[in-house]
Length: 324
Image (cartoon, rainbow, N blue to C red; front, top):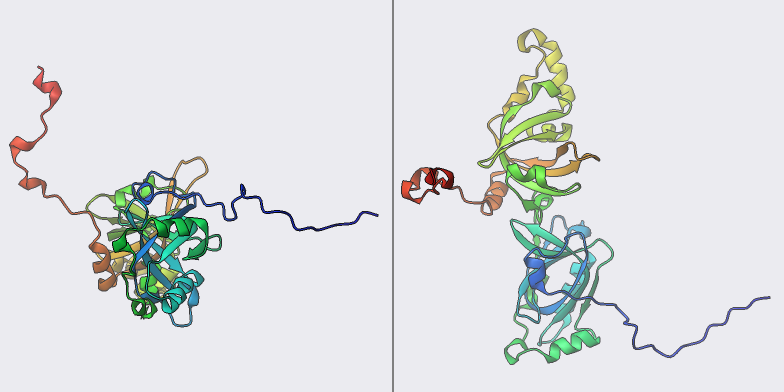
């Protein structure tokens, strides 16, 4: 009969316990790295936001952002959610004065309003804070004298700000001009601020296609029943039933759907590219016309350029004509 025998072996120093592969913050911020690859970073925490939570009972939506400075003095934000947020908040609430060095392993690269930062992945991320590991010890030893004090107030980290579930649904997603929606990858989620020009009657009303525009372009978005209900106060089924009753007056088209036209919304759009990249489907995951949320996002929009103010002598000459 075969038997299993287990024995304690000598530690092999060539095998790293955690297997860190740190990258510089500048490589993340510049867009050099593939956002589909999880990354490891290490840095000194120099700022920490208040804790945000959409509902006191929804612990998974609790989030906090820590700002770190890496060994090259490059600064970057990391948003931690759920238990990862609890980990940094609990540490700060108990720690004494002194520098806080954090390791975030297997983090996702996020982009919002043109700025790249990090966020923990759902389950893979590992967080180490002032732990007794070689990399953290070496980072502490390399700190300058002015960096050896904790520069943030631990009390701030324990404060709780409750945000509405609607606002939380848009938080942290990239904001894009409408004309770039066709250029994103399959599975991306992007926010746009746009005005509804028209509801496409040819597509029917159970799956509403709205034609929207901003100052950069036009796109066709697909919105479903729940979004129509949130805005119109009625399901498309009920709207359709009313339309059938009054078919002689409205040619079978629910006039209430025309109330979308002319309204400005912030749309959270899911990108789906067909297998052969023949077409891109743009599906609305959430839409809202709340002025407060629109104002917050509008701050990050690209400024409009008034072309009428450009002087003629500043225009680019036609090189082909100049040679004639």
